Length: 251
Image (cartoon, rainbow, N blue to C red):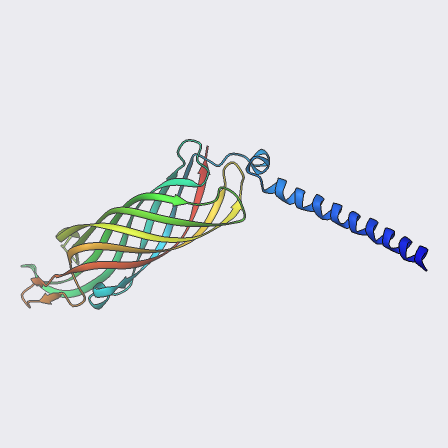
């Protein structure tokens, strides 16, 4: 009995040693694969430049929400990777968001008869922003953090679409600008390419503007004589921006 116990103990020791050796080998493989040098040896360098664009939905927040409705627009984007950085990029955005529109129909006396004309007013924000993006350089799913500072230019444009002898014209009736800051993030899905990746990106940003004048809902009064009066509002202009877009990597 004592010899059997000794044999069983010896065999168990060998099994334990084998299992420990296998676990150590697996752990060593995981650690080696996770080392930056090992990963970078198998991956192409991330592109220096990325260009793209997004469709955006703008949802007003705070006091701004009481005066305007949701809006939509587009934004163009350029990203630049400085030096040897892999995770850090500098992001430049420029876009336009339309947050309101109104159409009024007039009957005008042209001297040779009556003509109908449509007076259209569009309320927009031109948005510019620059700041860092932190994003992993590889992987199928790439979460990112975005920060930015910039400028918001709020403007109201009117156009007269004439009938008969009238031609269309457009004019900017009022405008105002304010500094802005933004913070947010998102998730990019790698669609194709290695050295020149194509990414589908979904982002959510909070963008805040300082005190600014803009045209609110119902901010136009028809005077009944072919003229209108504008009633601007003034407040901080906060927005939640939901963006869906594509970026393309360049060498």
